[in-house]
Length: 332
Image 1 (cartoon, one colour):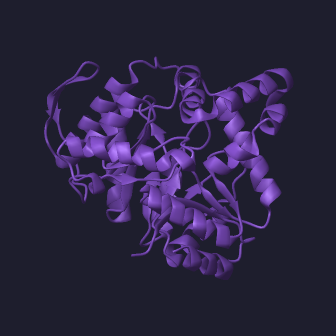
Image 2 (image 1 turned 180 degrees about the vertical axis):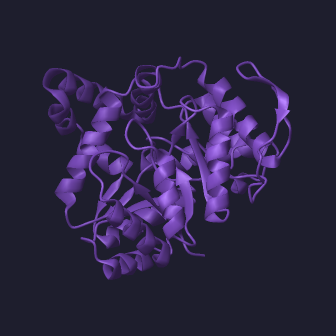
């Protein structure tokens, strides 16, 4: 059985829409399993997914992630239901809470309580997709008029993946979701983390293999190692030092508390450049692979042995479709 490879789309900075569409078409033709579009405080995910739905035929289309605060559960259901219809049933719902920095200071919405909101959001989306009249009495949402959507999506259930990292949210994901997007778990700790996750699913009476796991780290095939390494280090340092406490606490739980302290100290003293320079080579290699295709294949094997089902990849070919397809074939 071929590996399930995924690619991501950048949500920030400049974008060449024609090039992004062409890349999606090439990935679709090459056998990429799914295309995941992130959303934070840049472009919205759904517009890009509409473009990709128009120009692809086989790849599944997913959000990675949309937060559960800036849109109501019903609005999310409308987005995903419409896109599932337009794409011919290829959508994956990727949800997360984000954090108080973004939710309160970009969207202006009170952050707490995240797990309650996630639970109710998932339940309401599932009700609307199933065509069940929306009579729902939760702690946050009280909906009593029995609304149903005025169209019939092609599927009664769209798979829901949840990005979760603390114990209670991971447990909820294992019990209720179709997939898990772990966050910042080093490759050396991944097998245990996935094993624990699948045990929770099993204890809930589920087939543990029925809940898919997406790798928390990307595999990048490139000859421009220094450039991609610098971007990776900048990303790690930003999340460790500037994106609230969740990510720093996660890395600390995973045995990298000393690294987190050094990154924060460097960032506070010298800004983002100093923070990125403080990220250790060990931490970078634990969180992602960057290099030639031979090493990428080995990393994918290690992820599979840890229990990963979906493997994010980034393939730097300088825009050559033939080379992209050639590398995908080797990775598959």
